[in-house]
Image 1 (spheres, rainbow, N blue to C red):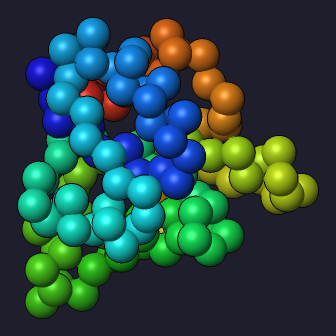
Image 2 (image 1 turned 180 degrees about the horizontal axis):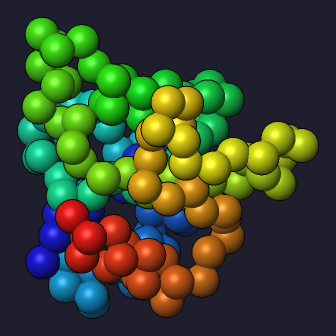
Length: 132
């Protein structure tokens, strides 16, 4: 069983993710913003983060991913840099830009478009957890 933190400002996405990941044996916790997500990361130390891009700002998820993956070595965030991140977002349907995982610019394990089939979400989560 893994502890999964979902950071998304859409309560429907959080609920759907919870409904498909909990029966698969995972503990699901949530945060509605990047700031709340940082607090939950520090308090809960999740095994995986599912992260939206566009929340309070259009790039909040990108900024949080970079804070976690490229922290100042002296920062308290350095201890969380190895937590895998699945970026789950509708940004491709809202902008003409296309994003993919990139070690320098978008350091996440997977970039997945919303909406996602619940079974596919479980498969992608399991894939990430099993490779860690």
